[in-house]
Length: 129
Image (cartoon, rainbow, N blue to C red; front, side, top):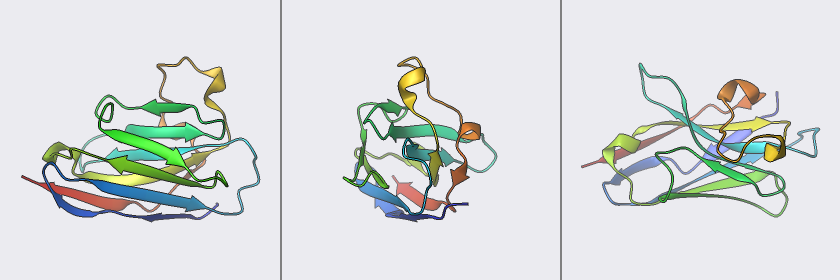
């Protein structure tokens, strides 16, 4: 598996902001989709935001209007800027990487984590009220 290096998690007060980053190296595919899922203990993992190498994005309902995903020029690093955080955003955030494009999917479709070949170890985000 390709290692994913995640960073940027931490603790913040409600209304605050955090930026997560995830870097991949050595991935053998030129077309990729990369982004973030999150999970709270006892609940299913949910999609937060993803971006493909052509810049197409998808956002989960909880992220729309508050979070912004972007990628570095080398397309091997993604950033998730999270604004207006609230306690419901507290979760383990996982970086995900898959060898596919969002071009084939409807614009409102968020691919499940099972389509991503690689998940990172996770970085904890804790938002206090």
